[in-house]
Image (cartoon, rainbow, N blue to C red):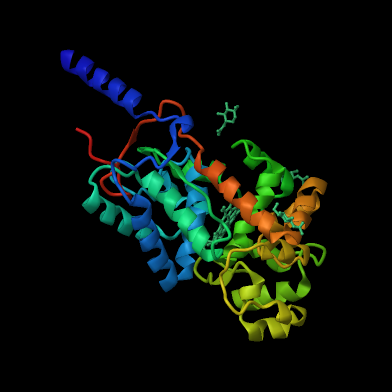
Length: 346
Ligand code: HEM
Ligand SMILES: *[C@@H]1O[C@H](CO)[C@@H](O)[C@H](O)[C@H]1NC(C)=O
Ligand SMILES: *[C@@H]1O[C@H](CO)[C@@H](O)[C@H](O)[C@H]1NC(C)=O
Ligand SMILES: *[C@@H]1O[C@H](CO)[C@@H](O)[C@H](O)[C@H]1NC(C)=O
């Protein structure tokens, strides 16, 4: 009984000491405890993204998928284990999730420099900012408040519940973002992240047969040819680029000749081209097109198509807000030794 009581007390004390509110996050949090942490993160991110720009897209998406599920607590990074057979990663909503190797490399470098100090949740936030800054050629930049802890809970069904589905209509999207205190405008702003990266054909299969009122028929043909037909399956599931302007020139010339002049010489740059593509009905997801179906959301699509500088600034602000989503009240947090596993507590 005494042992039980002591255990209980230890748990309570831990939970109290380790519960962090969003209000306590602060820029320069590691100034005294891990000097130059942001320089270390940035240099690893830049090296990785130079080698493979897709990893930058992966890092930006990682922040969204981490923070929308149990707050920004690195729960998305946890691997399946004996005690947790279905972590968030297993959810269909996390299809194609990548960039974890970059996070692991950063963590290893930081453990060498300042052991047991920098949380995996803060690493995700720094790395996403650095990737966004690099891929936008400096257009998207912001100071990252830090001091998050990594959580110990990661459930596939939470990711199913909280991450938006690519087939969603506007009503569902607005509700999904509202639940996390994000406005319609912020939904539109954050969706602009789809100017970079790739998607699996199964993530937009409905679009392959959608009517011309919802998708540019030339773009639809292009997607059908890239996907090898209108019924991709998990076993035959290629990826296509999210941004039609990064598509291969020959395919665009065949299916969507009007877009040839809009092809980008330098691929995978983060900018407001998503909004132009959207107005031309040449975006991958039903959820992207759905932004045109409501007066307010559509107005913001037009606004950000017109002003790329405004999007850069507003996207930066929305990422900061995203990065402040807290863990559920009373959650236990820790500095993990490795980002893919919780620490061993006994
Ligand atoms: C609005 C609701 C959203 C939906 C329905 C959605 C859905 C998706 C889906 C299905 C994919 C492709 C996954 C695959 O098949 O491999 C994807 C990719 C991506 N999403 Fe979203 N997303 C949304 C919002 C966001 C937000 C808010 C961000 C970041 C701020 C984001 C960033 C990305 C990025 C960067 C990629 C490409 C990832 C890569 O290439 O590795 N998305 N999204
Ligand atoms: C949006 O989709 C949901 C199902 O996800 C459906 O119940 C609802 O009726 C749809 N709303 C509109 C306006 O189409
Ligand atoms: C949204 O805001 C409300 C009211 O300020 C707050 O109680 C709630 O915890 C917030 N939700 C999230 C996910 O941050
Ligand atoms: C675009 O937005 C920026 C930032 O708000 C503003 O300074 C600029 O005047 C806008 N440009 C146009 C053409 O409206």
